[in-house]
Length: 124
Image (cartoon, rainbow, N blue to C red; front, top):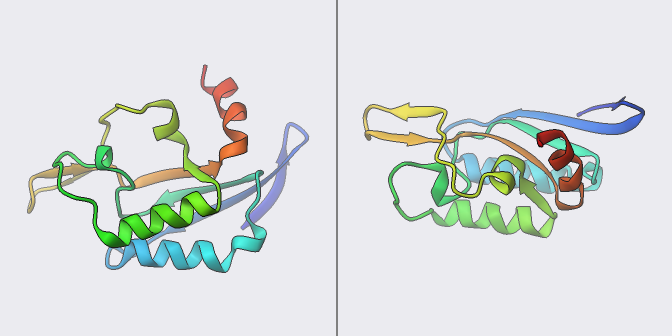
């Protein structure tokens, strides 16, 4: 975790790269382990190697139990995927699996729900 300030506002930046096997469980454990350090000034960014919503993949397959467990953890910690909060129906993908013929959004930026207004001002 990198702690600093931008425009005289404190920020904690966490960059993670998740292994592609067991990614939801890995992320959930990482968030649980660092829960005490995560607050409304924390941004968690990186390659999660898993979609967080059905809109995060081109095929409309069911979201696995592991991903649903991760979503519960995100909700409990008041974390939200910033891109998805502003682009509810966007189908932009960052990864194509030729083996499965599917596109996925595997890179994410999470922030605290109470900080969304900060991102909206920057996004407009």
